[in-house]
Length: 272
Image (cartoon, rainbow, N blue to C red; front, side):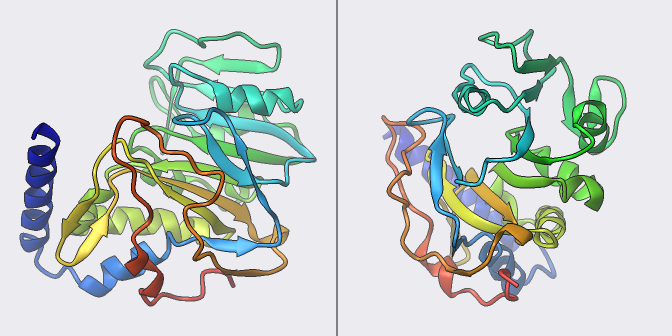
């Protein structure tokens, strides 16, 4: 009963938000959602991290990566432990926690938030990477910063973005895609990423139920994995989802997959 009411209330809010946005085009929403649809490439996916929340699918292309940057520290660090277990140093940052739940010789922690610009206890991704990244070699980014990802990545320089071979993102508040300003913010981030990366995996986080409004179904939280374009030799839209290695984030909540309608939304050739 409680979950049903929460979902109904969330859906009503989403419908109202859509109705209250003059000039918001359905085609703009379709185009953005289409940009999140994954491509199957020549690089297979593996799972790093735990079986449920904290585990992510990444391309099996980790050889030669010299550092992982992982803003947003949780109660578990299974992803970073798997990365460090492969000999890759992990740099973690979060001002909302006192430190790491587990120490490791390859782990570095900063009590800072990562954001679009450096000020106070916030450091930009450009400045954070410049502080620690080796001068040579590819990097990996695993970002879970509770909604700050959109402005942070949109503000990051192309030079820094292109140093990452693999990016794993947790996208938050996607149910607000029905709001004009939010959609513009989300699109700026995806446009910046599309210049360098191909989406290779998409997985709804079932921590919140699907929101339905104006004929669209949207998961509020979404996991996204991207691979730099120079690592991709061939690609085609991935229609076989969920992936065999996918796990629901919250085992005791209903799980669901990426909405099938998204695969039919028109968009530019994102695999170019």
